[in-house]
View (spheres, helix red, strand yellow):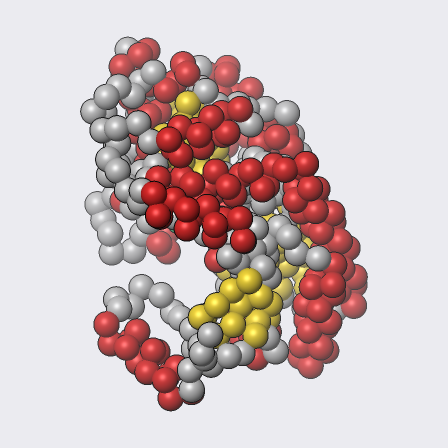
Length: 405
Ligand SMILES: Cc1ncc(COP(=O)(O)O)c(C=O)c1O
């Protein structure tokens, strides 16, 4: 594969600036190729990728089995309407159902869309099946559920909402990891509590071990639904296929996206039969949702992920190793690292300062990392990462921290 000169690469940045809406602050870097943990920029520089497409590339870049699945499906059938049965979609639903609490799946194209579907299903469940006009959903402060109008309204962070008024009514935001706060917010209008098992976007915030079980009990006590947004925590990210498995509970509705397609856009909303019955033909849909190409990629991603539990085990072991190494780093640089938070390979370190310059410093040294919420360095590498690659990053962080301490 040919790489571009600096001049050609600059042209990509210029065209990007001229022709794309400025919804992202992009780094001066265009990625041309990826394999496993590595990516290469258009001008041929190599990087170790600890962002993983924001928790998407769970099997690494261009996993050979996913590539072949996409190629084969593309040769056979790329798209067909949901007016017809879609073999790969059915297969994917069966794998998800067999490996989760759920009885039924609905497919869409992103995390936000999956959450939209969950919000609609929860409201409709009460109106159509229970005969109660409950519509309100209690979400958490600092949560992130997406950028569509309803999921933005569900999101508990004001900074994303500026300029988009009026938002969708029917959402209350209460403190995360505080069961009393939910209890106080429940009214006769409440239909569901919606939670990320670990808050990702706001900085890898892990609740107390018994928090989700308490939320489950509260929902049962009030006869309301528990929606878990596993868009970021699902598909092995936390060391189990779904994060709820750590807590000995099951939700009524769960949403997925990110890792599900191994890099191909796909979202899913899963629920029990009892709740799913609220959706009848014509009540919800998506032209591309459950498209053969995306579903083939997702089927293969899950097949690889579930093979012998090998990758999930690797994720747990590497998560522990990463944690140990970062805690050592924290001991060495207590004035820079305030806290280390690790849930499988959803990894965050809270800094005592702005994280953006550190992201740039890592990039200059060939490492892609992410900064979220201003001062949290977040790492969401492919689940196939090895100790050697973690060691390389730690070495670089040590060098950088040394330079600024
Ligand atoms: C927990 C959670 N929910 C929803 C979303 C939105 O997903 P998408 O960007 O695919 O719409 C995200 C994205 O970061 C997320 O982390």
